Image (cartoon, rainbow, N blue to C red; front, side, top):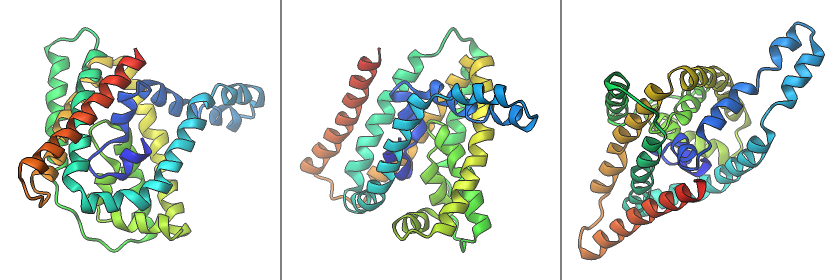
Length: 268
């Protein structure tokens, strides 16, 4: 998830779906703040019980993995994207393409109304990834807003948090802030992300419980629409197209597909 979130156009939420932890993740995030309400009422025992219910077995290894990926990826991935654009995006195109099948298999009985949400998701993602990047001067307040938008996008398969940062004109700035440890900007980004995480996870938790089929169709639509970005990145990467380059683009795409299918089989 951490590696995916660094790459514009690839969603950490998609990786969570591929590995089968998406619904557990949303439920777990929602449960992170359940202890606050009883604590504010002075119900310490109830608050403590809610705190113990937090899915630490998920969040501790997941958090460590994401932090490591961000630390290493912020140094390596920009270089790979600049020098091997077509191959990297072909790999992630394969990941997303194959993961659509896995998500589709999780959809329960549905009707035409449910399926229409897939079309809505497709249109939204297709339009979002076609947006033109903004050019703005970063302020602490604006970075706070960027954090809120990016984390919400991260939770949605098909909508990339890093891509939203790219559209807001702060993608490279935040990578530099991580590398150079600009703590003020990092703190503002994290505060915005945490607040948004609390709100958006509760919304998604409700939708998955009360409207599971509609929500899953919507997520499938998001993923299909989001394929526009890696496809365009491959086609317009500036690569010299010939038999060799075409072979390697296809190879990386197939590798992405195979990885997802293997992970899906392991999950089952």
